[in-house]
Amino acid sequence: MNAFVLAAGFGTRLQPLTDTTPKPLVPVLNVPSICYTLFLLKEAGFRKAIVNIHHHPESLHRFFGQHDFGSLEVELSEEPTILGTGGGLKKCEHLLAEGDFLLINSDIISDIDLTALVAHHRRSGLGGTLVLHETPLAPEIGQVGVSDGRVLDFRNMRGTGLLSQLIYTGTAVLSPAVFRYLCEEFSSIVDTGFTGLIDNEGLGWHEHRGLWQDIGTLQNFYRANLDDNLRILQLEPRMKQLLGMGPCMVSGSASIHPAAHVHRSVVGDRCVIGAGAGVEHSVLLPDTVVGEGAHIRNSIAGPGWILPL
Image (tube, helix red, strand yellow):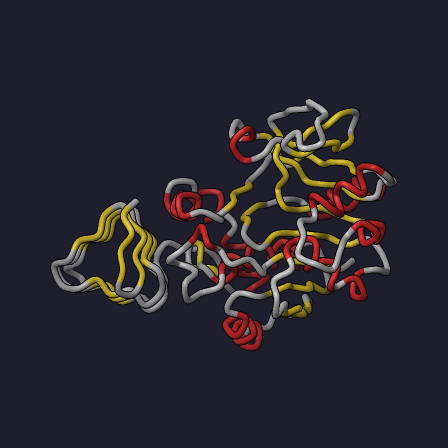
């Protein structure tokens, strides 16, 4: 089974992080965020991942040219004009139309058991299976309406009145039938593909109760790095074994003066923290310099800028 990884978004809610870096390469605990998705694919035995890209494509071409993911082949689908989640998938129909495939976002961190998901989907006989996750934040994020094992609505946009504490995780197994309902223009897969499956082949769901974090906003990014990072850090040995990289608080390439103070912070690649400097509960992105005697607290910092949170 192949996978399609959604990675073409602008990441506007992560600005200024994404001003010069595509969202899939924004690091979480010193690992490019897309690598958490690629890790899941490789661990589950997927052989090929098609990744759609648009924002800062040259950076992504360079990254994948420099990194070998071994048994997992990565093919990039560049969109000169961004096509959205629906149009971007439709563009790659010729690569995915032979059988069921996995659809997954590149801006989530999870420990979803993809093998169990695929097995659940195949038993269902439906046109697709979405991974849903229960959270009290569902009314804010977007409630999925379900009934009798089927997904029937999203945010009550179909007027079913079905509400729940379940959200869509950005992960699904889909049959090629979904392509009948997609369009080539910019579009949302929810409005096209998922709606088409609901009305015809049926759309099921599989609940995930473990780690799931979206890092698409500054607040969520900050929280994943600092406040809710324990379960992510626990992925380190498995990721290191499969990808040669894993989450960590302080990059091995960072330079921290012995007289500097670093507390509950993430220090990125090639960062420099000078004598007498202090960094507390902050995220330092790669190449950030904290000069002698300077202090950063409760912030995200990059080269030449600091964003208090």
